[in-house]
Image 1: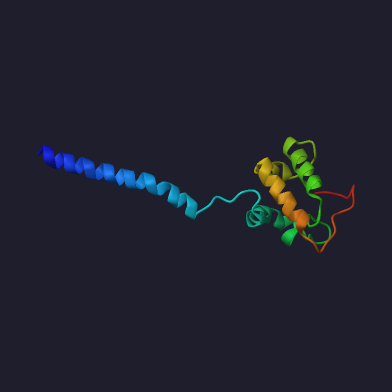
Image 2: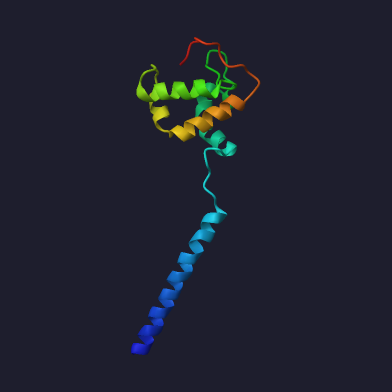
Length: 125
């Protein structure tokens, strides 16, 4: 009886060891996107498309983000997050991103072309 129990225990320990050693291999197969990943930045930025247009190229009457300098967009998001800049929904949206995510989104929009950034002092939503 004791021998049977030891075989059972050994099989479970072997299985546990195999699972523990497989963990790093699984992590390598599915890398976590970083804020420097342009595809991930575009995915984060997709939340902006409903109001600011596809790829940040807004329809007339909306604020385009395509081509806006990254530093300006980052500053605007910081102000939305703190409430220093008035808005309707941007306060909640800005709080949903980390600083690194905002920086990645801002770089992505800055790299988009086809519509110039709005002039300084232009109306914002």
